Amino acid sequence: MCRKTTILIAFILTICTSDLMANKILSPGFQDTTRHYQPGKTYTFNVTAPSGEYALAIEYIAGDHKSKLILTSPHGGSLKPDFIRTRTNEYVVKAEDNGYGDTESFSAVSDSKTLELTQALAEEIKRTTGLRPHIILNHLHRSKLDANRAMSLAAQGDVNAEAAWKAFHAFIDDAKAQVLKNNEGLLFDIHGNAHRPQRTEIGLLLKGKDFKSNDLEQYADKSSVKAMVKSGKATMTELIKGDYAMGTLLSEKDILATPGKSVPNPVDEEFFPDGRYFNGGYNTARHGSKFSGNISAIQLEFNSDVRMDDKKRPEYVKSITKAINQFMAKYFK
Ligand SMILES: [Zn+2]
Image 1 (cartoon, rainbow, N blue to C red):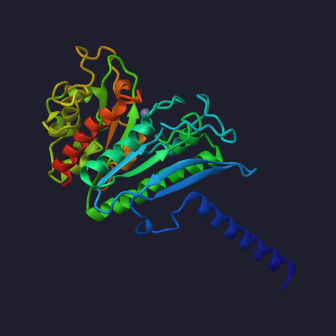
Image 2: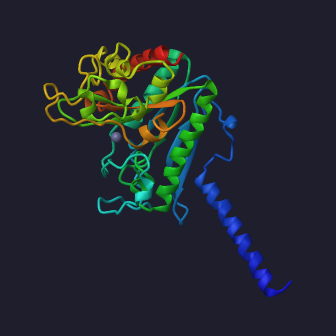
Image 3: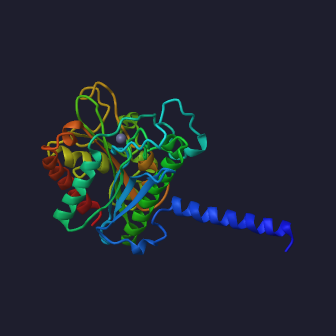
């Protein structure tokens, strides 16, 4: 064999090997097909420094086969490995990342206790319905990875943060594939807000000004619950302020939530003069049904009283679980 051919073969082998390694890093665990996931079992993705030091970044606890529910906690983590770049407000975002909305701003402040809240909700839903939902958790602090942003803004070019971001969304995609064996499903993206006066905000991708309209049905196509409306499960109006809207169900349990029956407009100045409202972010757009598919998504932005106090949180978890169970029983039997 001539030297040139030998070099060429060596080059091709190097490319193939590095591709394989990249796949291994980029699709953690996911050498398995979805049928290998076992309900209740935990699957993890670690970030690793060149020195061998590592940290748990992403955790997926597989749900029961019959569950149609996925819960995600994208930026409630607390781990800050030194070997991951700390995110800054100065980073220049690549435009091509922004297919799911480009209105989200930079933040490095974690949504405190939302990871704990998500885990507790999953346990309580399992206890009360017998069905374990799928949960995907980002354990990294938001200053290292924000898993509710397009990758460029989320990971700011850090190789480990990018791999963890890909793992987070790959686990969600795998959970969705399992849920879809039941033909339909719902994802709640769990967050925390600090708006005053305190209220929980329900995000369906409608903007604050949209709620002033007398015709809410016109917004179905841009909402993250589009599949629920198109399949005839509910009208947009019902999902925003009907008896079984998430805001209505939570408010009935003394967790003031908007939009809902009591406050159908989340930017109603009479109730909330600050005019602030989180209407749903990257995950709600990407993993809901706005663009395609039969899995809808709703962003739940819990106020601090609901999530911060470790002693009070269990009672709130019971109330939120009742609301989620009612919603699922009504729309996802
Ligand atoms: Zn958040």
